[in-house]
Length: 223
Length: 197
Image (cartoon, rainbow over all chains, first blue to last red; front, side):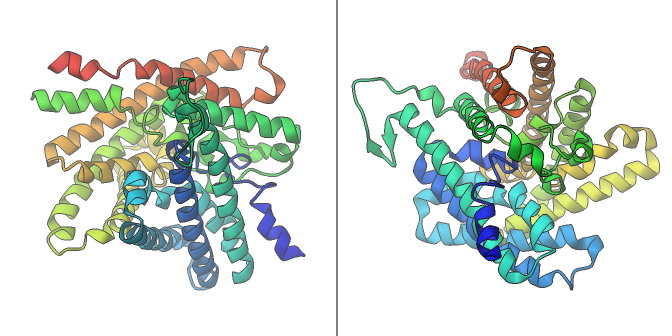
């Protein structure tokens, strides 16, 4: 029962993008088409699963002071593996994701989970947490990219949905990314009536702006 | 010279790192509430971007490419950047304490900032020379600064308003404001061709 809860945690209650607000850069950048977004989500899931398992195994060996550099090396190794696999087997996706593929290394979700979960929990739980968080990330990317691709290019997974109406191409450009993301977060706020965000501490440990945002004392991220 | 100007202007305005490429969104949303912290963060980012490019470019050309180790790029770059940030922090603390006081708290955040790793990798993939890479990095940093400063102004007006719908308060309205600022940056799209051709 507890294991299932760990797995489902990342999908809804602690959704990394919409609730914890981590990993915004790849979410905004790769959600222009469903194929790219799902590819990005699965690549990040693979990295999360691998790094969570390895970091959880190493948690007693790595000294506390150098843990962050060690985590980064483990994560970078898995990112390199993923990008080599994609380059070999799915070259179109590799070139579409471009610079955002190596940037999975600095995705706050992965370092955040390593710091908050994998370095404190046993291997199996960490693996489940990695899968759950990764699927939560993929699900959000899937939702957001569906909205953007349908409105912005009139297609879904490359299938033409309607003709006659000019698609609003600004939705697939940069401003549309911010706008759709803002609306989705507002939707989550409305559905949960703000309970989820307030009840739990947002992942300040994994947030790169934690030191200057002072949100940690209030138990809530201001971002 | 003209080529350098093209790279600089397009890095600042057309391909703005935050508003067009979505790199460095975390500090853009997290540190843009006050003008001073927005400025401090952007100066630190510009500084580290230039330093990181100066360090990673020779490593890529002299070591990784010479020995056919390009696949180690991601690991090497992130470690070099992390070590560099630590080194800069230590040096500033010892020799320039005044500067450390104003930039110090921002430096550790920059290691995991995607725009620093992003700019070093972009310089390599775009096959820039060393001088072009440096110009591109400084331009990207200045573009980051411009976006941060403009957005901190917009944000203080948004926060002063009390007519925002309940569910949009906080992050959602900030993102929608960012979307409108991003629309204004789309106006620069043709500016490079217009100025230099």
